[in-house]
Image (cartoon, rainbow, N blue to C red):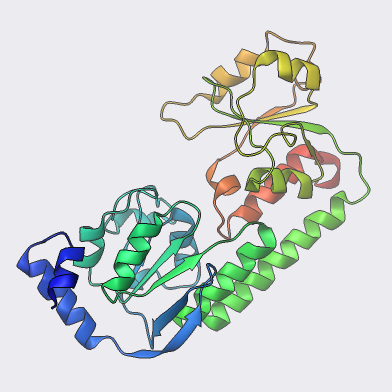
Length: 301
């Protein structure tokens, strides 16, 4: 172990360095692949110890039948239930380098949207391969599924899953094609009221589900005041929250103050699980189907 590598670990303990040394001496590489960030990555011939740096990646790995090879996951990796028992390596935005290295992974899978670039660089310098994903829409999520399947040796399972996802997406699009597009307000939390605008997976889902996102004129996750919602006159309100103690009934009651809003007048206010709407995993198709049933119930009896 060189002084340079030692310094990259910040002078960590001898057992940790020994673990890394053993890892580097036993992993066999079969070649290189280009990840979704355009980086060349030396991929192990067969990955036995995988660390996931995002809940969406954790879901993909388990969906591909590789859950028994996942030794570390990011915080909030809560699906499937088996993932909750796997060692945590820190949050999505702040992964813990020492915890990751201590798990002796032969592959780390991260995401460009959220994981710190410096962490990816440090792991790579330490000889731990990191495959970075970067899906931007539903179609690219299926590509990510395929790519992960390729790097972990689960090509057949990944190809089958990607085909199923694509078929379900096309079925939704076909059912809502040509239908009127109701105005939709997607609410995240109560205080403050935040929505999902252009460039988010939620915006993509609303459009593919046959709705018109009233927050699409803004990018990212804009704050909304009541006056702005009153002007937009949404026909459907969909409410989600990642906050603990969130009450849909309380959020629904909040809107009863403005019966002039079409969604309130016609009682078209619905809850939805945030995890199936904003995680680029196979379950995002569940989110699409759920939104389509809410927005166009007549097309999904």
